[in-house]
Image (tube, rainbow, N blue to C red; front, side):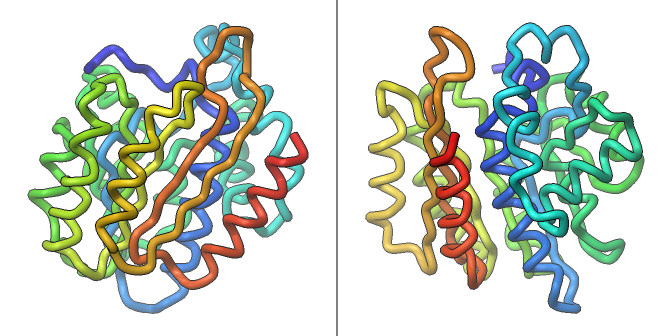
Length: 258
């Protein structure tokens, strides 16, 4: 449970997909003047150095942000976040979802980040520098304890590593529980698309729950290295903001060109 370190995978095609959707949703949500809450269950370290040995060992970022960033319009919030991170931290920086949230949101918004890995948690606190409430906590427990949050408008990102195989079985129930407590919240789940298709039952169960305004975005891409089992990325969003269907379709066209 505590072995996963995202630095090996930061900036890969799945990150591009996930972070582009997240940045778009946060930009859209922050257009309204009322404050909002952002909660993330598995935050990681927030800011990654793609020149680090761990990132270079896999080379996954070259197939993701290195290849795809220029495909985004200059004013797309994902591209803006990456460029802002590089202005602040250097040309090889890559922002994780907590950094993107802090970049897209406003001082009056609340950000709660859960990270259980001690080293990742320490790096997360350093990266956020008071921009968020950082919790050394199980992310599922934190989300349940905070919902409904104050402010009540907002977004929950569920982004586990899926090292715990039972996540595929427990996440649909967790989403239903959170939605019952926080029926106006945007709930976004990221999941890997693997060659064995293990995500399919989980997504069918979520779709069968008849949750409101559900949008699913799935993209596929070539394996980033020989023997790599991930061949795509998925996001399913409950209470999806208006226009997310169009954004998801644009991302699908972009990934189809890979």
